[in-house]
Amino acid sequence: MKQAVDHKALMETAARARELAYSPYSGYCVGAALLCEDGRVFTGCNIENASFSATNCAERTAVFKAVSEGARRFTAIAVVGGRRGEVSPFCAPCGVCRQVLAEFCPLDMPVVLGTPENFKVYTFGELLPFSFTGSEL
Image 1: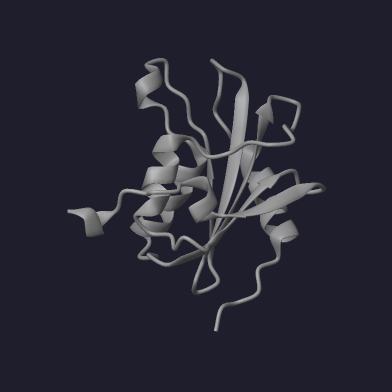
Image 2: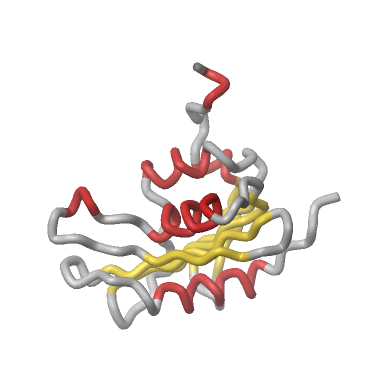
């Protein structure tokens, strides 16, 4: 049986993670909160680098933290982003983050986007239709 997801609480956790973003170049701060099947929540923020290709997004930071702690089954993710001092009404995971999520997330997993006060819930399958996974190898 799937656990109930408190989307608002997950968004608030993502918003707090966003406050830790290191984005001196773009000024765009993103936070993510990844809910695991066992109830743990892993957070991530974007971490920029002067060599932009070495930058890591909030969503991937959360996934990598979770996987490095043994978590492999996720039940929801929330993402909050925007320019420093502002929160965007919509900040979706980039294509690379969607591909990383595809490795671990079921197509029906909720992806919560927006702000803690005003958000919309999508399924992962809506964000990445026709995903490429290990089953294609």
